Image (cartoon, rainbow, N blue to C red; front, side, top):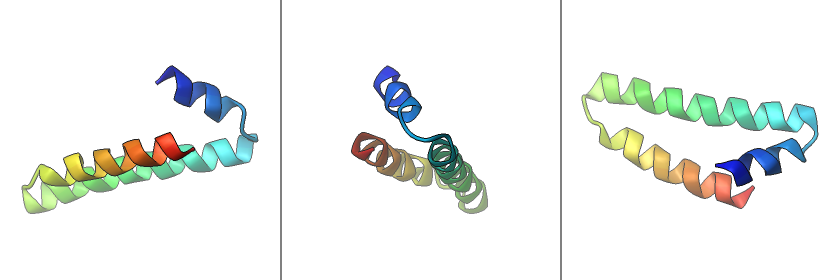
Length: 57
């Protein structure tokens, strides 16, 4: 996780905020889907996507 923080700190502030909002909205959206469909696989799937997305930054 430290590598992610260091990389985010090297980005311009507006871009860092946008990336943070994107990650937060993805997690919250997955949580909504879990509650709506009673299926925890949504969190697992989105978590895997987010890991790949963060690694690509």
